[in-house]
Length: 134
Ligand SMILES: [Zn+2]
Image 1: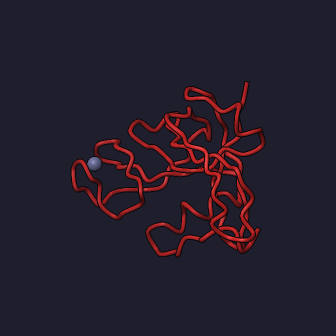
Image 2 (image 1 turned 60 degrees about the vertical axis):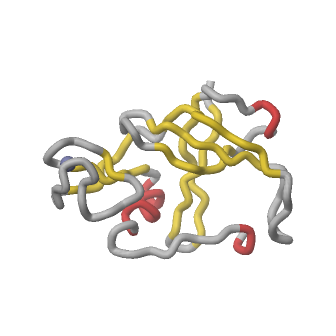
């Protein structure tokens, strides 16, 4: 699996996001002043410009908002086909994650499917992927 993905570069703003999976948690920054979720991670709220943004754990479920199926084997270690989806995160209005849907055949995935996070570990990085539930 190591050669099949490009991993994120961790920095002080995004480290909490990529490592929260070590505890099985999905976290997003949330502004303590106006309650807006801020994703991708950045040190300032995009709505009120407050710097009072802190990681908050969400339920880890969501809904497939849109998706596509990739059939192109971009790298030798890449298993195809796979689903690239945009998931609307429960409890975090306005937050969408571009991710993969795993654990099921690609042809059963549909817009509106309920999904739950699962993490794929690469060293200290835990990539948030999603599985269908129901
Ligand atoms: Zn704010």
